[in-house]
Length: 475
Image (cartoon, rainbow, N blue to C red; front, side, top):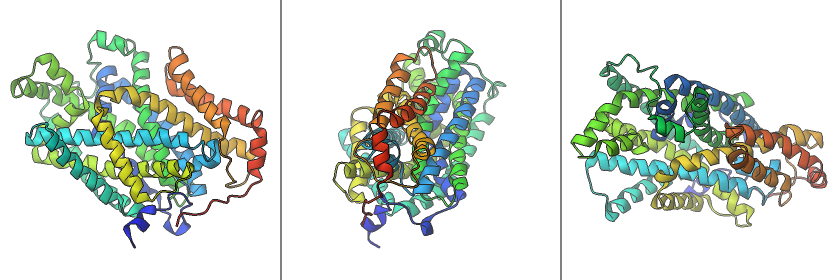
């Protein structure tokens, strides 16, 4: 089979039954996409801001919520056989309206692709000591980009295999390096340390009380949970049953919000003093600058390389490599729907290349510097987007008697309006009243969408419910 034939991978059509898979194989992917150095950084960040116990409590809370949202999105994908952004055409947004989902999810998942690339580049610089020149950037980013394109070129089956092998190796290496660092740390508070940020920094984050710390952690962690819910839909179209994708969603969220928070917090707490000493003595940095760099995504990468040596380099490549294949895969699905919704049916080979080129542009514009800012707002938008599809499938469709996929209108204005209203209310208007922002975005979506869809836009529902699905499958 030719590369372009493999890569099409039923991007815009239902996945046939003979290609469906069980929960264990799907779980390699849901766990693989979140077990990265970025997620470990989020574990370190949340535990340092809130203390170990509060951050773990927030992780458990987000894991439960994320698993439920991920199962619901994955269940719809299992039933329809469609990816998250194509699914949005039929549930919540319409053909052109689904552009909003492609833009949101595409930006977020390609943003993670860019972020992981930037961390790999920083890690290679730290490990091999080469200069930060344009020529070196071209070589390293060029090789990484070619690798992700090649590995993704053979569709979901190859993606699943890559994730299976590399996740097993990653977990083994991660446990070994963490054990090595923790063993050398005599502090009895390694599993229950308090907040480590200075009071003025905590005040700027709204984390001066236990509740404030819990809220901060929840808002930070929910960004990955929102993205993972849409990845669950991309993978759920390959599920044999609703249970299979539900279990895979739970495994992914357990890995991201509990395991990575636990390991990220413990590892960086044990490694912080030696990492800062390395920056001040070997790299001749001022103590304040060294402390700031140590508590950054690049600092997490440096810590693994500092304590892991050659094993640390292997860990870095495995951790980022498996996630990059999955990020490229989901990003290309979002772009496929984006262009198709605009009337341009593009080859998936082209979409994989475009996803990686966009990722390179994000790196050029400093994605690492904007990380904390965009992950929170995108978490709000993705939970709203997922909530609208869920309520349309489970409530609105049944209210109007729609069974299965129906024809799609160009724009489902009820979904588009609800997304805008929910995001503005959650992030800008009610953020000081309901400080856990996804509560507002999800709540507004679940309440407002059915009201708009069944009142002001009811005629559109009726027309759609009576129209068969006529879209041609991808050749």
